Length: 155
Image (cartoon, rainbow, N blue to C red):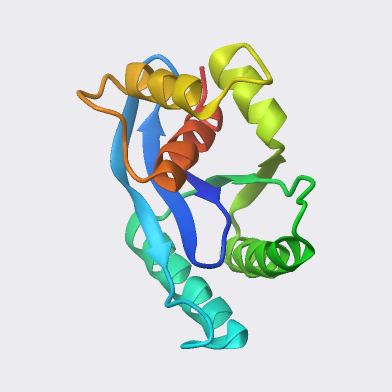
């Protein structure tokens, strides 16, 4: 089983899939959500993300993970908080002996759509088609995590 993760601080997209690239099976997808700042302090958000991820791992027992790598952000505050969240995610995955593959957004788009500059709508439509869904998965973070998990599946 593969877990796909789209890191964030307010929302972390996740999906758990098995099967093959030609016949993928979704077990669960969605988001891990934390309350907005200043209601909850950043260290508390990171603990919550780690604990929620640990629960998913314990329930589904994934062996592989595909995690989106950080890319350039215009807002430095955003990149720092997402980097902290990603660090917690990587820690929890390794602690549970899960093999990790990190991919940039460009690599993910290239693999899923064949075009590294694909927009959100193109990505979401491909995810819908790949998994033979009736509608595009919501929210965006969850759809992105499905694309990542699919990449981690064997042929």
